[in-house]
Length: 109
Image (cartoon, rainbow, N blue to C red; front, side, top):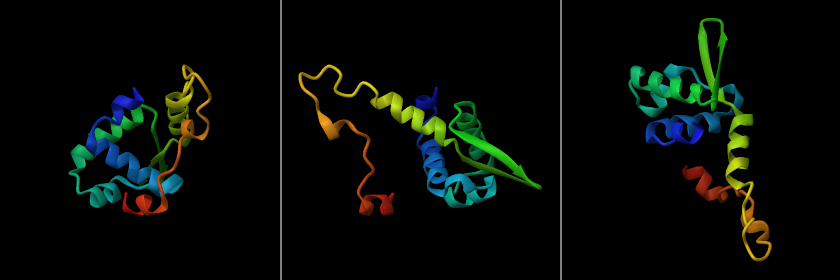
């Protein structure tokens, strides 16, 4: 379910922005402004990310904040890489470990 939730370009953009922001999260109006998405479209995508367990929401006063569920994110990355090189004839070492993009690429993303 998590992978299908990220299959939409718009939903992936929402999720990546939330990951960049971290636990502080964004309100829907902040997300809509940063991503130039209409409120109903953003609401649809946030609902999909919530159902997949990729984001969490919290209320602070009158504001609702969305932030990434890092446990779920790390679990998904672990699932994708848990059998890396398991059928290889020899150990593949560091190539099999999830890697962060180079600092320059991260700034552009």
